[in-house]
Length: 221
Image 1 (tube, one colour):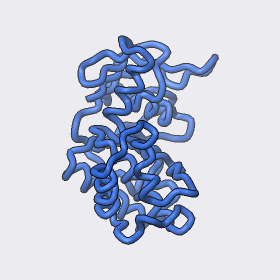
Image 2 (tube, one colour):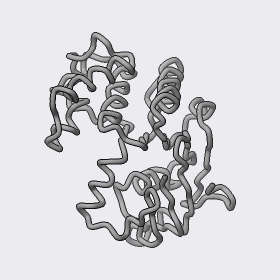
Image 3 (cartoon, one colour):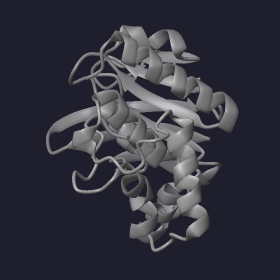
Image 4 (cartoon, rainbow, N blue to C red):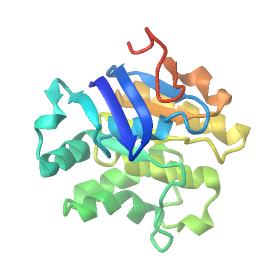
């Protein structure tokens, strides 16, 4: 689905990733693990097309992204990828339903069918009866479920989740990971996570350990 070939990313004099090769396979649940400062978030930003490499190539579904214009790059990201951010990034004044619909509204794509789809997603992630609550009226686990529903509203093939269980207790961590696993199996969505959380690793189909911006030899496939 996404292939990184000889990818490096530097910020000024700091090299965050060095000559990295990685294949993200369709349908997997892939965890990128490693200590703080190892380059996990940088790697997720590259896989998610939020950033571009300093050197190397990123192919998405066999197409080199280096050939895309900035507009084409953004369209590719919007069509293919959803995101669950560590802080959830919900808009405080909007209801759960309106937060889920926000990406479509920003793209000018909302209609009655998509509003119905947003309601279905909220029900599917366990938030039936909470559609009109604002973030401050929900628990941390419920806010995360809103963020998951929002990531899925555009029907992405790939979802990037940055430390999705970092602020959750054990019960909510296992509930969240069971939800990700179910969505992976029922919707065929590929998930790529960064995590420090050993509790989450049991749910993964593959785990890669990143250290100082590098993957150990043989860990790319």
